[in-house]
Length: 449
Image (cartoon, rainbow, N blue to C red; front, side, top):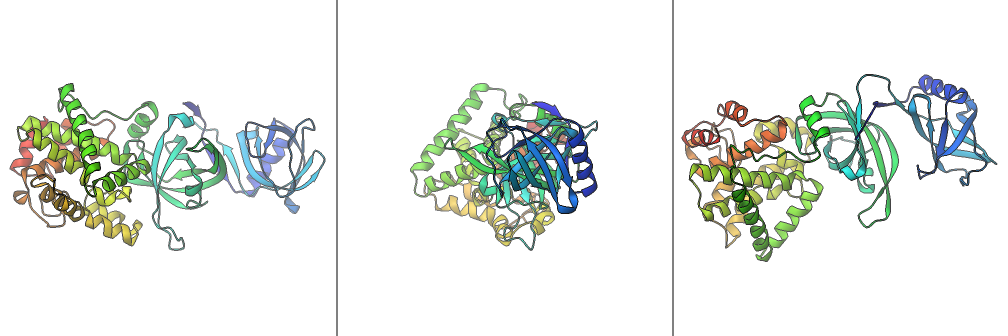
């Protein structure tokens, strides 16, 4: 990772002209066509904003081939600026270029940005905010992060994603690597340029690099944890799971369940959907892994589970978000209160799918001839809350199964860890005891501390 000063994209004519005039007089300037590794030195010989033209001279020794209509990029040393434009005329080593509509500028201020190499594979999850004039409503985008500051970031989009996100679109940042941003931070796409990257099959594919200006700063603890840590946090606090052998046993049971599911009628399709959803949103897979470990660890500490019960808990963890595998952003909406807050950003299909989640998962368990006893009922109760504000049954604490209570607390704890890079068990118990009230819940909290 490399610290760099933050960029800013300006469409102000006066500011663009000022940079070009300075670049004509001083500094080293370069041009490239599509491959940035082949930079060609240039000199700005004439600026004619009235005719919307710039004349530049490129190094005559260069083998750059350009013609009218080609897209080119200019990198100016002044304020580390860059812009994209079009060739409108060629005369030997002299090029006539369109005057830029906007220019990316490096700012000279205290705040720094962090730059990531593509091999770092830093991922973010953002959602395009619904626009009535757009055919795509509230689309979720999982993208590679090029650089970031607390107030902005640059994302690398695939060719398919490039067709969805346009300049001036509004988005909300929902996940920063493994860390959930709650509430999501809204932002605006302030620049969009072509970007080449290596495709899955090894060939080059042309996508986009987009800049996002955020309306609110990313919380410092989350930002620092994301930038500093090379891997996701480890939820396995020794207060919860002391035995490494036990954790390995849980992992083996998870692998075993997946293998058995692949052999069941409809099970293979379900696992394929889970794996496809996990590729689009790494949150799904990590979320299930952490949920299994927390539920099994707490259940064992409480003395509520046998080996067969551990299998049931793992089965429930895999199935509980099944309705959301194709719409992974829905898996992060915790309850009806949060659903109401984001309701306007969801499409009609997403609104319906979220509310169908518990019943859908429960029905999958009912139709599974090898399902565990009570699994369907626990899955149906997964969005209930002890004060009766959950759904679909508006059940109260006394109506919930003990293992439903275990699921609810474990799920809330995993969400809490995603929200708080500096999480602690004590803080979780202190804040969530006020929400989850009842005999079974208090036993679970006591086991946690």
